[in-house]
Length: 110
Image (cartoon, rainbow, N blue to C red; front, side, top):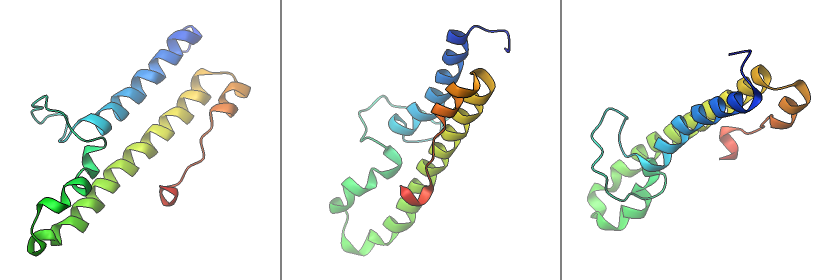
């Protein structure tokens, strides 16, 4: 892969990112779970926020746990995407270009 042309290298990094970020925004379950092709809220892992008014007050105790799991999934995916960009930048691009691509984020900022 080191001998690949710069456009091909960029394509590989973009493909790796899309494999992480597209399911995060469009998929309710894991990639092995059946997708019914129904319209979903953006960031399905956190979509319970928009549905809380549908539940009686007595069953809302599940919401904080569900939201924390969803937030953990989103943060973990974004951190993995960040790592892929940084590794891809240093592996596939020249040093000045890689330096421009560095991303500084933290889970607490989300």
